Structure formats: structure tokens, C-alpha cells
Image 1 (cartoon, rainbow, N blue to C red):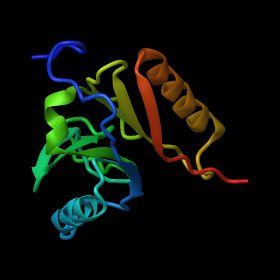
Image 2: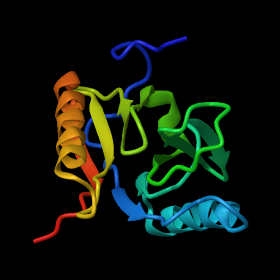
Image 3: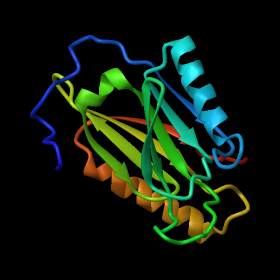
Image 4: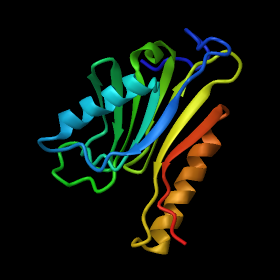
Length: 168
């Protein structure tokens, strides 16, 4: 059931949110759960409400809960396939924000967003993981076109973060 963007609890006026991004360099394998626990530990220690995660390598678009945090992952790998995700993005949010969450948009392995109801204007947090310099111009242009399309969908206050792999 999809929640309506204007109905339901809203983040109070003037309530501070602390967000950060982190290139996690993989959340699969033996250390996957340990890394998730480390992310939640850092978020608690630093008072971070929203963490944008890049290079997760998580092979599926999914939702998980660890400690006091919800993790949302986006991947290009289709369900039932054994392909390896070479990118992958995720967003971790503190459980106190869950009542305000009205959309998780898992676009692909390089783009995703969460949207939160707030008094005044709603909030959107976009996590991006741009192709690095070793990719073709077409791949990079396609990424930025997809990013622009996603940005055009939101009438919210948009916070954009992640890894843009800029090279001079």
C-alpha cells in the first residue's frame, strides 16, 4: 500500500536532520553484517539520521532492519539472477523517521531516493553513484540523464549526495 505524500505524520518544523554519505566498498560476504552494524554504530555515535551509501554491491533491491535503522538498497540485478552488482546504492535511516517515510524509489544500482513528509515542503534524499572515468562517455551521459529525470520528478526539497567520481 502506497502512502500519500501529504497524509500522515510530518517531521516537525525546525527539527534538525543530520545526513551523511559513505562509500562502503561492499556489504556482501562474511563482513556484510559486520559492516551494517558498523554503519549503525557510527550513525548512533555521530547522531546521523540519514546515511547515503554507495558501492554497496548488494545484489538486490531490498529493505532490511539493523539495530535502530532501516536499510534500503537498490540494484540493477533482477530477482532470481546470480549476476554480481558492481555498483549498488543504499540509504539507511533512523527508525524515528519511518513514520514520515512515504516513498522509497529504487531506480537502479546507481540511483535511489527516499522521500519524507515534512511541514512546509517535503524532503527527498537522493543517493547517487556515478560511473568512474573508466566507463564510456555514453554510460556516463546515460547516468546523468537518469539523474536529471529523477530530479525532475520531485517537487520536494532535494538533498543530493553520494559519489560522483569526478576526475580532472
